[in-house]
Image 1 (cartoon, rainbow, N blue to C red):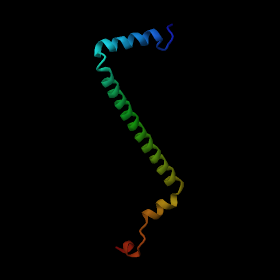
Image 2: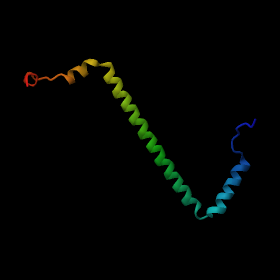
Image 3: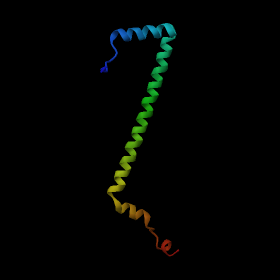
Image 4: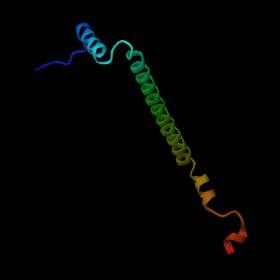
Length: 84
């Protein structure tokens, strides 16, 4: 049964040489910048999603711990609204 192994030094050198042959030495910085921007945008999006989830769970925990606040919001405060 094959075991999972990480990429070794010889594989990294082979990948780098293949990229060098495909893109050329002048285009590698442009490709690296593009990859960096893509990774940054991905991290920003995941951080925003994590923050939204944290805010939603915080809101849910606050509303579930105080049922009186829910009752106060659902009952009208003016007596004229009750008779209407």
